[in-house]
Each structure stands twice: as C-alpha cells, then as structure tokens.
Amino acid sequence: MDELSPGELFVLIGSAAAAIIGWGSLMVRGAVLDRRLWSTPDGRLRPGGAYGCLATIFGWAAVGAIVAYVILYFAASDVRPSPMYVFLYVLMGFGVTAINTFALRVFGWRIADMFERRNNAAHTLFYTATIASALAFAGANIGDGPGFQVVLFCTGLSHVTLWSIAVVHAAFNRTAYRILVDHDRGIAFRFGCMLVAIGAILGRAVAGDWPGYLATTLDFMRIGWPALVFLVFDTVLARFTLTREIDGGLWADRATGVIYLVTAFAYLSILGMPA
Image (cartoon, rainbow, N blue to C red; front, side, top):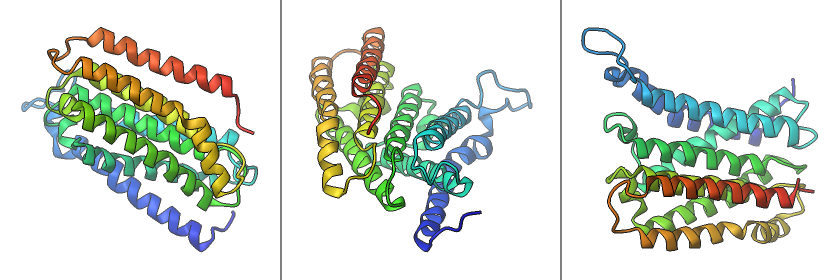
C-alpha cells in the first residue's frame, strides 16, 4: 500500500474530521435526535418520515458517486491505480462538501430547516449546493499535477468563487429570506440549478494538467466567465419577481432552472475534455 507524506496524512485527517462533523451531524439529527421523523408515538412508521435523513443519504451518495467517478477515470495518472490515493481524494471530497454545509450556515441555512421545520425549499438548497460543491471539487482532480496542494488550490479557487456568487445573489435578491423564511420552492430550485450549473463550469475551469499557479488562475477566468453571466441574468430575473406571492411562479422557476442546467451542459460540451 502506498505511504502518505506528512502533508497528505494531515489532509486525510482533516478531511475525515470535517466529513464526520459535517455529514455526521446531519445523520445524527435525522436518525437519533428527531425520532418523530421515523415513527408515530405508538411505534408505527410515519408515512413520509425520515425525509431529512434520506435527503442526507442522497446527498452523501451523490457526492461519493461524482467524486469517485472523476477520480477513478480522470485524475492524475499516479492517483488512479492507487487505492490509497483514490481513498484520500474521495475523502477530501466528503470533507470539502461538509465544509460547504458550514458555508450554507453563513447563508442562513440550518439543519433545523430540513428536520424540525420540514422546509422543502431548504432541502432543495441542500441538494443543489452539495452537488455544486462536488462538481467544483471533482474538476480540481482532473489532470496531472505535482500533488495534493494543487488540488487544494484549485478547490479553493472554484469554491471561493461559487460562495461569492451565492453571497452576491443573496445580497441583491433576498434569496436566503425567500428560501428559508418564505419556503419558496420555485426560487430554491431555480437558484439551486444556477449553483449546480456554476459549480460544473467552475470545476471545468480548474480542470486539466497543472501549468502553474498564474496560468491556472488565468485559465480559470478565461473558462469560468459564464458563471458571472448566470449571476447577472438570474439577478435581473429575481428583481422582477421580488414582490410576487410565494410559489407564484413555481413551474416557470423550474423550467428556468432546467434551462440553466442545459445551457451549462452545452457550454461544457463545446469546451470538451480539458487538455
């Protein structure tokens, strides 16, 4: 079995701790602390119960599938054949997406929104933000590079941009309030699809063989610029719908969210695989 360097071991331990704290708190909240989600007071299974816990499992499985697939088929040539390094980078993926849940808390999201409050819009935000984070991290693993430090650099580049876009959107459009207080499912889906589209684009923007810190940053800006187009377009759209009633444009928002995803997929298809 390959031996990890001290730096890699530190990243392994840190990723494991972040994953346990972030994902573990969600699982414990759903499976242990809120048993009302599982059954009625007389012990019978509650129809539709454990929704929050199942949401967590779905998110966990989605992260694992996305990150593992990319690492097994597109990661550096010295990573793919090594079970230890595959494990390291998959665990890093869980750690990064766990940190992403803490970033959601700055946005205003709380675990209670998924469980005690049973806010379906908050569920959508959790799903989509988690998948966006997984895509942004997965892209950082594509291509050959000198080590884990370049993966961390690319991950930071994509995630800081992703989080900044989310904060700017929330500041101009009352996004957090409309999702977490109004429980507007349409806004949550449209905004969430925008995050997924942006996460995929930013992941592609940091993908490829490592050319150096400056060249990577320049490539990131050259390829990732459509993320700002999504932000501007959705901000204009959100400003026009600020005063509408809750879920007033549910199907229009869902259609717009799907258009975001299709547009991002088309852009990535035009770009093709990174060199």
